Length: 146
Image 1 (cartoon, helix red, strand yellow):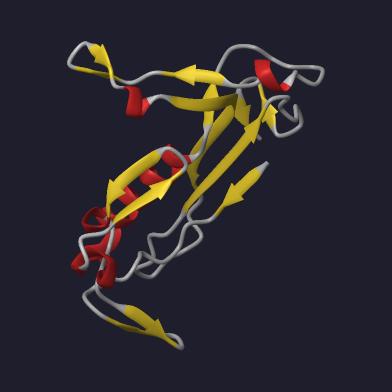
Image 2 (tube, rainbow, N blue to C red; image 1 turned 135 degrees about the horizontal axis):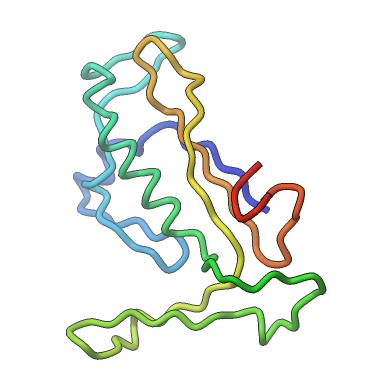
């Protein structure tokens, strides 16, 4: 089970170095999510925080995409054999399969949602939950999170 509360954006140092981030099988350009600014104590040093909201949302989406869980309709009551627990996910490029984009993911569930706890300029209200099969039924009710 994974519960993730994304917070700070990566610093601009990564973007200046032309770096790419990899999370699981997902890779993306650091320029999409890096930002100037930081907190020192309780004080913010940087651009107005609302300027960073769009980058934060992109950051959260990339984190979600990096989780190696693929949703399926199969509910697992018992333990699944390891070789059956991997789902081959293929990515087509121009109508053909790119062998470097073959991903092995496990069946399960992942979900991003928002709970407004930050106010007064705060926007970091995204949460990510993920779990591989077998799912804990008390956490996922009727296909939705509790």
